[in-house]
Amino acid sequence: MRNIIKFEYHMMKSYLLFFFLLMLIACQSEEDTEIVNNENGLSVNSALTQNLKRLTQNPTAFDNFIDNSSKISVDFPFEVTVNSTTNINLDNITDYQNLIDVLEATPIEDEIDLNFPASVSTVNYNSQTINSESELSQFLQSLNASDEVNCVEIVFPISLQFFDLSNTFIDTQTINNRAQLFNFLEDLSQNGFFYQLEYPIEADVEGTTQLINSNDEFNITFNGLSSNCFEPLLFNNVADDDPGGGDPVNLNAFITFVTDGDFIVSGLTSDGEEIFDFTDYVFRFEENNSIIADDDDVDQDFEVVGQWTASVEDNVIIFDLDFDDSDFGDMDDDWEVVSFDNGVTLSLIDTSSDGDTDELLLNKL
Image (tube, rainbow, N blue to C red; front, top):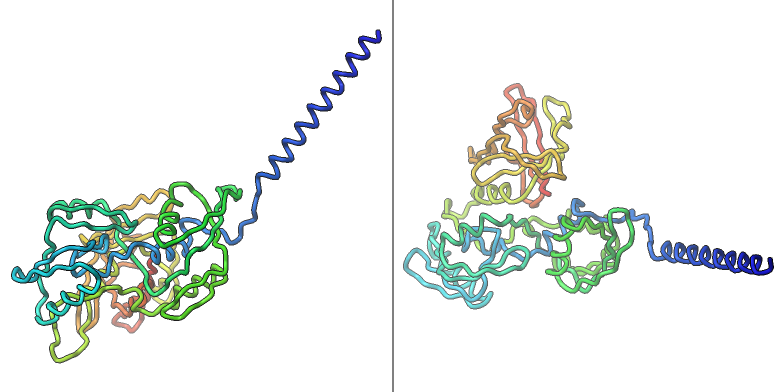
C-alpha cells in the first residue's frame, strides 16, 4: 500500500513538473513573438514606398539622349558616333559636357549611335554587357521603365523594422546606401513584408539639409519638389524649332512622361458632376499607343482598353484618349494638357462648345 501511495505521489510530481514546463515554454514563446499595432507600417503599395523606390533607384534617365531609354544607363567607359562622322569617347561624368557641346553646335536633331560592345546598368543596379543594337533591343523588352526622382539625398545609414502580414515583428535592418534601400523595397512584393522607417531621417532636399520626422513629412517633401527634380535629362536632343529663342511646347517630354509609369485617376469631372467610377483602375500608356488597364492591384492583370495619341495644336498639347468600351466614356475625349511639369500629376481639361469644362487628373504611382 505504501508503495502505491509513493508511486502516485511521484506521478503527481511528474505531472506538475510537466505542466510547469509547458507554461514556461508558452510564456517564452509569447515573449518572443511581438505583435505590434503598426499604424506607421508601409507596404509595397504605399505612396511613400513608391516615392522611395523612385528616389533610390539607379539613375537611368539622365542619358536618354544617348541610349533612348529610361530603362538603362550606359556605363563608363563607352564610345558614341555623332551624325555618322564624329567619334566621342566618354570615360567619366565630365565627358558628357564634351558630347553636349558637339550636339549644341548643330540646330538639327542629331543622330547618336552607341558603339558596341558596351556595358549598361538597370534600375536595380545590375550590369549587362551588350554586343549589338539588336541585343540591346531584346534586352530592353525584358525591363521595366524608370520613373526616377532626383533632388533628395538621404544621409545613410538609416534603420527600419520589418513585420510579417500579421504585424509580427521580425527584425531591424540597417541600410547603408541607395542600392540597399531600393532592393529592400523591390523585394517587398515577393516576401509580403511590412516595414517601418526609424525617424528622424536626415536628407539633403534641393541643397537644403532637412530632418524628416514622419511618413507624412516625407510625403510632403516629395510633393513639394520643383519640376526639374522630375526631369533628369542632361540634354534634350531635339531640333531647334525656334532659333529666335522662344519656348516651344515640348511634345517629346510629354510623351516620355506618360509612357514611363502607371497612372491612377485622382479626379474626374464630367458635365459638372464628379465621377468616381475609375478609382480602382491603374492605367498605362504604352509606347505603341495602346492604353492598358487593370482594376485589381493584386493580380496586375492588364488588358488593352483603348488607344492614345498626342499632338500639338495652336501651341497646346492634345492628349486624345480613345477607349474601346463605353464604360470608359467619361474619359474618352480630346484632352488639352494643362500641366505635367511636377513629374507626378497630369492635369487635363476639355471645353465643350456650350462652354462646359470637363477636368481629368491623373497621378503617376
